[in-house]
Length: 490
Image (cartoon, rainbow, N blue to C red; front, side):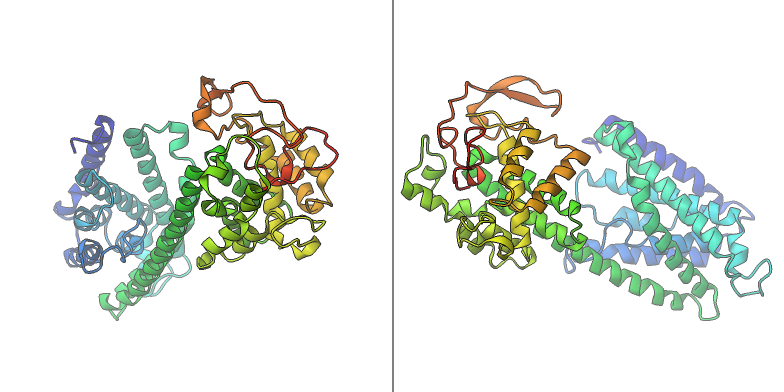
């Protein structure tokens, strides 16, 4: 707790006090607390949390927030508010925590869930949920009053989501000093839907619990939910591993070719911008983004002395650099999740008129992903500022792409980029400097919000563009207004 900021400790202490006050009536005379149900639900939640601490299971169990919310919402439906507030406490205090400070995180989670379940139980009771669950109102005794029973259950889910979101925002402000206007942004919309689903599962548990089959039958709801959470957690871990793989490859390229640092991420973003404008299916967008990010991974196979050479390249050196699409394809050949991205990595330097490389494909022989990445790559190369020359304004870059559409680039992709830029703008590429050690610190950039660089005087552009150029795609960085783009490998 000593490493926890003072504001966060105050927030945790306040939550603990509120949770204690909410649970105090549980032992009051006449409270009518169903101790057996309370003990059984508490033990069940504790058992669900314990595998996360067991070395045998490791990180394969679903311990993420939401894994056991159906059980907590079932407790909110079956117990009075004061008793429901206690169900999550033992499990939260012994559950696994991923990051330090461990004690503070456990105490906070216990208090947070206690308050959240209490609020859900209060909302459920206020709308007559316990009576509807047991057949009150117009229902028959012992039979849930459907469909009315859904109303208090949904109200409980809403209260659950609101309180959990409010507390999440408070701890973000206190522990991470996040601005209040950003602390709650997006939390409620992303959580409300899943919590409604959890509430329906919790309602099924509560109905079975109250039925003639007894509490054991409720496990038939909990077990499938637990398994589905486990599968979902495994999917997210696999997805995180994919992102880590991509990040490692991009960092390796950035370290080797410091002139284009940050370029890969921007190409990925521009590729998705184009894809959305042409109506590409959502399921393909992630693979396309990976293609844009990894399009230059083949530079890992190019000698560093060639990538960093000052001055013009010899024909032999140029041929070596032109091999990087094939190197890249070989590097990612065994990475199954990249799917169509592999073709884009191999063919993003093909030209529509067939004069590109490595295979001289033309027209629609060039894969769609490669045609998208080619336009995104050229656009970012022209608009990015290097240490040896300033980036072109976005309109000038778009005009150059339009001039080369039909010969070098797919006109459909160029038009999509122009529409996307008109709709969303482009803020990151113009001020980026990729050769960090060749720029000296400058005043704070108003648009980027970070310290911007001062450029050294630019060398004049020769017939082949800026001296020392290594990365502009297919020569679009030549002298402005040149009659034909100079072929330049990336």
